[in-house]
Image (cartoon, rainbow, N blue to C red; front, side, top):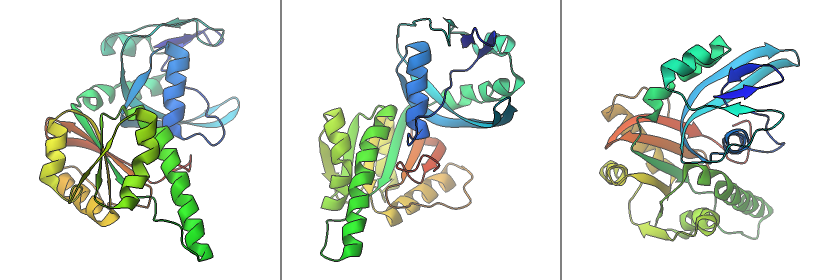
Length: 260
């Protein structure tokens, strides 16, 4: 909980995005700035839409976990407090924040995360169209390297294909982790459950068809409602597990488009 002296209210940490910044990155940056705690991203929480004196506002929330941090009072936020959920509900100044908080406890019941990443494209070719596709692929891979550290990955895996391995290279450099290669990783639901059972956050680069098949099979098996499973090039499925059971799944169609 943070207290804003300008409004004399208690609310959840939030803030404005920098132009071109992905909402996942904004969320992590604002939590650090307002609380001093470096968070680890979890499942999505309800999005708020309301009118403010400055016009319509949309605020995206995520469940997060975090370790120790040092809070520094500022003119924007002068107090911060860690509270049990019932006490936090009573202190919140806005009813809309209570609706977000009520979804927090189930979202934090997570033991492991598996991020399924569709590859961002192949090597450059001579034709202009392929050159443009390759440029977008490199740009997407760099964006993955900036955004996915928010989930605190502990292992990186790829199917045996240079396109998929190259997709994770910027992330691997950022984290200082190797990219292990396996043969039929994403399409093997049992293997994904094994990764979840091992704990931590696994990032898996794989083809779109096998990602769609795996997410669909997991959602059916664990009774998670999904109308359609997509997997655009460069997209990410964030799968959250309790033990080896899938509890929630978030789809990020693009890490280069702040609106996606």
